[in-house]
Amino acid sequence: MDVFIIGGGINGCGIARDLVGRGYSVALAEMNDFASGTSSWSTKLIHGGLRYLEHYEFRLVREALLEREVLWRMAPHIIRPLRFVLPHHGGLRPSWLLRLGLFLYDNIGGRDRLPPTRTLDLTRDEAGAPLKPSFTKGFEYSDCRVDDARLVVLNARDAADRGATLLPRTEVTAMRREGAGWGLTLTDGAGARSEWTARLVVNAAGPWVDRVLKSSFGRADAHNVRLVQGSHIVVKRPFDHDRAYIFQNADARIIFAIPYEDDFVLIGTTDRDFEGDPADATITAEERDYLLQNASAYFRHPIRVEDVVWTFSGVRPLYDDGASKAQEATRDYVLRTDGTAGEAPLLNVFGGKLTTYRKLAEAAVEKVGELIGVKGEAWTEGASLPGGHMPVSAAETLHQHLCETHPFLDPALAKRLARLYGLRAQEILRDAKGLGDLGRHFGADLYESEVAYLMDQEWAMRAEDVVWRRTKLGLRMSEAEVAALDAFMTEAAAAAPDGQTQGETSGAR
Image (cartoon, rainbow, N blue to C red; front, side):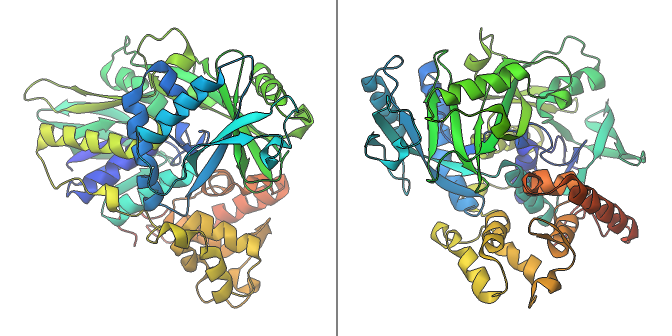
């Protein structure tokens, strides 16, 4: 094995995909489900980071802005353009400063298909209707939204399709240098152990990156990342149009209010330092109230606790640059190698953000080439992710095509399948002539054929993998329905022949 990767978040899966596409032999282990950590708890945006301009992170913002349309072209089914409304708040940043920032945002990274910034009269534009009457002027600019967990699993799927070995729910329990190579001990969810060797190890464990260094190398003083908790609330939708809002707060931070899963709005995020196991992060009452209060400062009708239908929290592993405040810590990434001449090399990945994962992966693969030899050239910029091999305009009408080929489909179900799976939705529908051909109905619009696809091709093992990461149907399904789904998946996995479940480890397609 050339490279062994620890961590199945966006960075680990992105690096695996890039490496295997250049001809390296690659394996990746993730101790839980793919995207079960930071990568599924984001604000679901592909964006440059407008507020990072205030911290003079021009290189990061430019790189992220350049990546927006690259990623959109790669995966137009899970990445969609979105217009953001920024109301001018008279007591905060002056109007000229906002316009200058948006001018830079429009121009330092380049735009091709995304429309430019424009000024809004909120007394006339429908975007002003949900807001308090005091907000009379605003600006509208472009970014993109993304299904973050699906972005991870599609990178994993593509890596496996190209020959990488993917091992979810498998923990690296021991690592040791053996001359110029590595010996690794892996333990899977059933407690079975296996031994692996690799020329190079990539530590892309996200918020657990320092823990890997401590547990595997005894480096009790390892401290490379600053853990910052970000929490979000999902509320009943307080407006009807399809644009998002970005609100300035008196503490100099911003929050977003983004249309989410058709009937809801996602509000976030917070920024607070975190200590402890990242897996234990949960929203605090203080964070919830912060989001409610700051959103209600803008909306005509206050957002109340009873409007909240779901909350989630995640821990971001920001590179510790010594910033005094959590919100000021850099979102840039840092790659560091470990090992002297003749020793097996270790590449550690610190920080990063969802939008720049592909560029991080390219930089990581360049480091790998320096350490164990170059194989192949950069290739991912023009390569579609599974289901996304189509023009971005085709993604907007794919659900209509699904309805034409399968007239029994409810338009909402067709839209959801097109949005999640793109062209691979046909593999779920196949030659079905009616809903009965899709198998058992589990609740909402989830049918057995989709569950089988997710188990066979996307490593889903439990109901939570399906309803909270591969889809967001947990917002619409009852506890009893989710429990029944979990029982079905457990039984189906037990009945399947060995090697035929969990998306296969490699080359399933």
